[in-house]
Length: 308
Image (tube, rainbow, N blue to C red; front, side):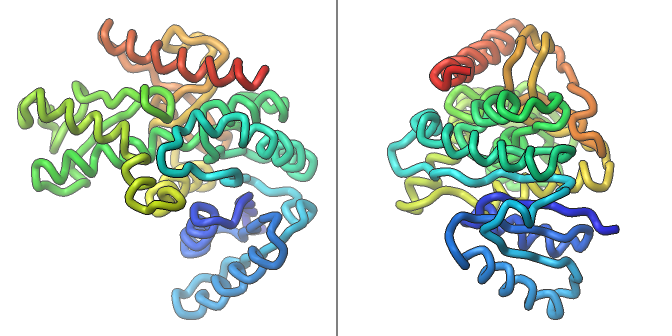
């Protein structure tokens, strides 16, 4: 029997992800949205791309949660996107009600699924999903660090005019202005970037990484990034569905790791068939620990705003 993946939200991120998943050809996909006929139309269009690209994935568009029943993985992208001048944090109250309702329906129809949260403010929404669902922490994971790290690696590769494949990096912390790109541990073909790029320039690249989403929002005028976010989720789904056990930075629920308790925050994690299979603790400097704690404090404030 083929695996089943549901994507909640058929907007730019959701629909782009569905197309990428279909091209993987390892699962059938349900695309849910509350807008009548819209997910059905997009699904039919994607289905008709199958003969050209050679995939047999069944893509179903729906406005009914019942069609998502018994999904193995559910990706939640629904909610309001950022607008120019709006921070991810501004979205917290607006999206809290949406995500709470979505999570209730996901749990009702797919009680054994793994949830990947994409909706912003991402760390807080993952915390909300955990609270509403009652799932163990290994079955709720947020997509943040994969995207932020991809942005960091892109900027480093551009700076040095090298292949992005040779750039290895981690971005930890909350998915927002307080994220922590670990420049000390970033390497190019094994060579630390501190040996290749002046410290002042590295700090500029770090700041651009923190502002990566806002930069795209400003350029687009309406809406936010969706190509890079969708493939970031795809990498997570690959690791879970195919049990690859890849280690990547994700938003996960910490219970003492990194000195942080009962909070979702971005750290390196091993993803496999069970979802979150291991949290990797990197030895951080005192300064880095301080910055990570500052990021955690910012996420905790959002959680308090939600009252959970």
